[in-house]
Image 1 (cartoon, helix red, strand yellow):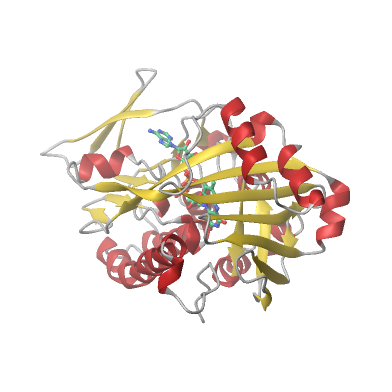
Image 2 (cartoon, helix red, strand yellow; image 1 turned 60 degrees about the horizontal axis):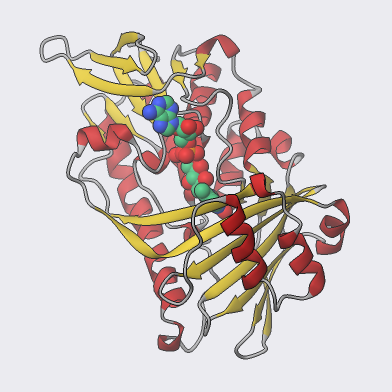
Length: 362
Ligand SMILES: Cc1cc2nc3c(=O)[nH]c(=O)nc-3n(C[C@H](O)[C@H](O)[C@H](O)COP(=O)(O)OP(=O)(O)OC[C@H]3O[C@@H](n4cnc5c(N)ncnc54)[C@H](O)[C@@H]3O)c2cc1C
């Protein structure tokens, strides 16, 4: 079993590292190229839902990942307009910082297979040999039989395969932050707390990320609230203003966050590409299908992609299987996310609100 073909993985985020983990376990060689000096920590943290946790179990990573994060037991939503407080049990769900998550996968890999500071600049396909020639920013060139594009939301390889594929800015943005506060984590007690202000067009969510880290985010409708400039001072001022009506303990967490732990996230709607592979170039994770943050399926779907793709590579099967199996599932995340966005942007159209993340019953 396996393949003798040479494999390049571009991007060391969830998708690239988890594929590398599965290939390593099966004794298949690869080279992983990551543009950053170390792991790229934008995004700060995320929720891993039941589907992602099941896959981590199959990969043998469940316990070590869970030991670094916090299980979330309850989602508590405060609605400013109605004054209602709703409580939902969200089943298996782990909150974790991006750094803890990626480090726990990277720790299982042989460091000789990972090349940092290697930004891919160009990919060319030789018409005769079908080899893919990769050119990196530092001038290094190398040829591969198989190229896996796990280079994230703004994938250059997706642009290479589908040069005119449209993406539209969506009418919301997100500020995320990460604050070190042990006492507040103890106070949160495994709860995901959200303050929804539909009339004014914003939500504020707060989650424990590990025993001493609080992860938080502000989603805001850019038609109702002017976005700050993308610099730390402007973001801090924005957070001060938007959090002014929160209970004091919550407000302090947002306002005590270090400026270098704040991140303004601009989101796009990207339709599904025609196929998640073109011959032996395969798109994985956000490179294949950027999702809106409302889905909470970015990381989980990246794990689903990499687990399926590694099986296909190990069994020497056609990449068409990957496309056929992933399309219907990813469509559900994509369109489910757009429904949740509509609910957020136009709350008056809705009598009741769906819980703002997609938990598929599997
Ligand atoms: C603010 C924020 C909050 C989020 N919250 C959640 C959540 O709650 N739940 C959830 O499931 N998901 C969440 N996500 C989404 C989640 O982070 C992504 O969906 C997930 O990381 C996808 O993994 P990926 O490996 O496809 O892409 P990424 O994690 O983006 O990794 C791509 C990697 O490729 C590298 N790269 C890019 N271009 C090149 C190049 N040219 N050459 C070499 N390397 C390159 C990048 O440096 C990066 O390391 C969030 C994202 C953000 C930004």
